[in-house]
Image (cartoon, rainbow over all chains, first blue to last red; front, top):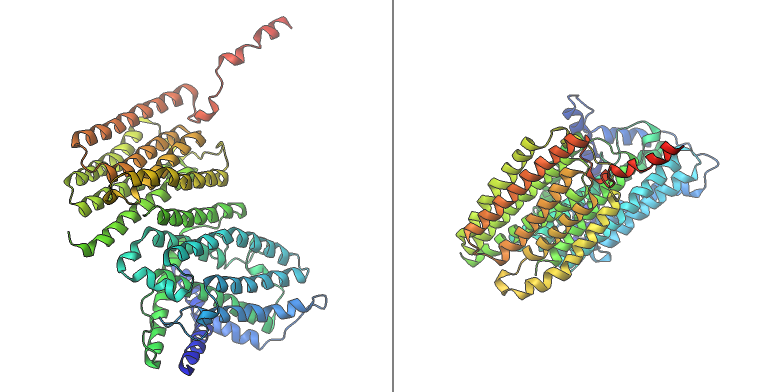
Amino acid sequence: MLDRILFNVLQAAVVLIFAPLASGVLSRLKEMVQSKRGPSILQPYRDLWKLFHKDEIVSEDSSWIFRFAPYVIFVTPIFVALLIPVLTRYPLFFAFMGDMLGGGFVLALGGFFATLAAVDTANPYGPIGASRTRMVGFLAEPVFMIVFFTVSFVAGSTIPYIVQQKWITPLANFFMPSHVLLVLAFVMLILAEGGRLPVDNPTGHFELAMIDESKSLEYSGRGFALVKWGGQMKFFVLLCIFLNVLLTPWGLANEQTYAAVLSAIPLLLFKVFCFLLVLVVIESSLSKLRLFRIAEFLGAAFITSVAAMVAQVFSP
Amino acid sequence: MNDATNPLLENLNALAVGLSLLTAFGIVAMRQARACLNLFIMQSLLLAASAALLGLRYDSLHLYGVAVVNLISKPIIVPWLLRKTSPAEIYTRREIDQVLNIPTALLIALALAVGAYFVGIPLANAVAPEFRGPNVPIGIAVLLLGAFTLTVRREALSLLIGLLVMENGAFLAGIAIARDLGMLVELAIATDGLVIVFIMGVLVRAVQKQIGTTAVGALASLKETRATPEPDQARS
């Protein structure tokens, strides 16, 4: 029992520690595709270190939400990391506290507070970004719903530990049309929810075009560090759900020993790295969509997820 | 054929069929004629893959024949014919004046695909159990989506592709039900499709030459109707 709790804490720690690394690797790879050298992959850690040692300025017109939100944004991905399979194939201590829908709700809570905090400061750019994020969010919501419904329809459960086994036992299930289409739909969701390129440009510095970034414009010092770290962890958690539950449920620890669990960490990082390579190709070959074309992009994701459901219903 | 490989083949076949449903959705939504054509080529390849997988699954030489015929006629000859007959300019044009905007069209297409369930499942249940699979209902869904493309598009080339998508859907359903249709019939159908493409291509060229556009949706009124106010002008 104690082991399982420790593994669970380790799982959250892995998300905490390696999330900035993933975003560092992604930005470095993107710069390399553009024939630049790019910052070191450790740059996000240095940024966080620097920000934690700076003074924080809080507008005196802002309410408690503004001060409270960074902690919520920071903590929610850690909660989700307790629920999902990051390192182990067997359920850990907190695994049955919530299923994939529960994880989705917890992540949405962080997004909700980020939106509130952006509106709170009366900075003109904050509410613009907040309303845009809500727009992307509510368009992505039906896709999430259909994806979860189809997953529970196919696997008979929404507990991620049960779902991940469904796709590979037997291996032929991996090629089920509903599985492949779900993977496609989920990639589009990651692009939309993570603020990646066809939806939002994460490297853009033009406030009027920002979607995700402008919510944290007012933050400084420690608050900004927490918001930033929370965003990186949210992306990492989404990647973990995608890779460990949907796409590649291999390489997770089978035995309840420290050696097995620890050796699952490099495998996880390898999987994340491989997916980041794919992500870089996607991001480098697409340009940012105009705001009202985002509806069409997420419409495509919706169609894909419904096609997954239809393909499942139609296979007697 | 041993039993161990069967679920894999069945799932791969279902995957090919499911992806062809996705391409049918794409054809409803794409603005550019060239993208439509590319999606159609992809769909035909998936159809050929499905036929080949079913052939492997049931050891049917005939289905291999269908796969080969599809592989040659649709992804290779159809685009070549279209390129020969219709002007190159219409491939790059964007179609802006659809009857419905794209999200609405996609929602209706979704309803159609879900509605195909009510037609497809009784039909699939009517045939022997070993013929059941995703092919029949999804084939019917693709057929309906092709018909829907025909109704919402206003560009001649997209209309032609909608027609071909309908044929693909019929094929998808057909290869699962009629596994031992005569080769002659298959060849006849394939040639028929090519002739349709040829005639439509020439027609598109003629329309383009006469009117200067292929936006056939704008051709709702005849020229004579415009001539009617003339007596009024003469009087005044």
